[in-house]
Amino acid sequence: MFLQLERLTKSYNERTVVDEVTLDIEAGELVCLLGPSGCGKTTTLRMIGGFVTPDSGRILVEGSDMSRVPANVRPTSTVFQSYALFPHMNAIKNVAYGLRTRRMSRKEAEDRAREMLAMVGLEASAGASVSTMSGGEQQRLALARSLVVNPKVLLLDEPLSNLDAKLRERMRREIRMIQSELGITTVHVTHDQEEALGIADRVVVMNEGRIEQVGTPREVYERPTTRFVAGFIGRGSFLTDHSGTESFVRPEHVTLAASGDGTVGTVSHIQFSGPVVTYFVDTAHGSIQCDVPLEIDAAYQIGDPVVCQLRIRAKLAS
Image (tube, rainbow, N blue to C red):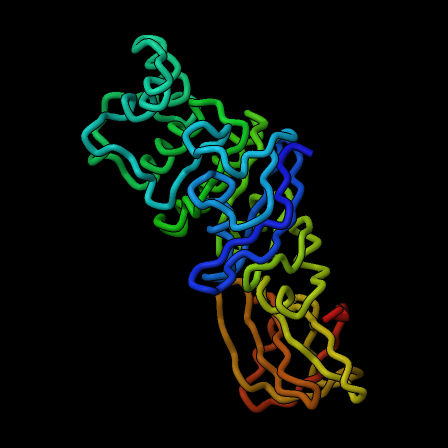
């Protein structure tokens, strides 16, 4: 295994923020650490990068223990949420900086930097001041600066959180394309479910310092193994039958009808979001959400009796 985390633990002021996290990551894999604020995902990333020292556990890269190796000599490179660019340097000097600190000649460093700027689509901005660059350009510049030193592991600490929604979507695609082209092992921290599901080979869902579930985006969405994962990833409804057994259903797995077989309920709320109308239906087993494509919407009103026909229900392990 290329990158291994073995029972990583970190506490602050007697509060455990990362609790015996164990994870194996393959070479060339893009793994997203996903979870709410305070779940331990950023602390885990910073331990991998050497910015935080674990209280216990090990970090192995190609079998070598990096747990106590200083950050500046680890085979890792980090793109921070704030980008941490040098405002007094132009774009090419920002990218070349890491190479110059490794005693590479100015010409070779700038040649390498130009190649990397071209890879991220900034070749025409080599002489531009950081202060004149847009948020998307700064994000790509920060990515180029991290990649130019040829790290074995790329660490992304919520690098898209400062961008607007449309730019964030575009940058997700660009990061994935560059990562795939270079084949670099990447750990990406985010609290954005759409981002994690859209970019990752595997998603690691964290909660209260522990890993709740590891799987492909499809696996964690379609087959959540815990109630937390089911509630955190996407949208859905928790239903309880007469025996007290709990199950989970996604809004796209419910069909509404005016009559017929199914779970009877009453429309309590309606939410319009363009191509889809979401109905919230109160039933004896709990509130059910149903996504109805606009072109087949029957335009139910609040208070209308309806029948919910559930196509897929997932039983939860815990």
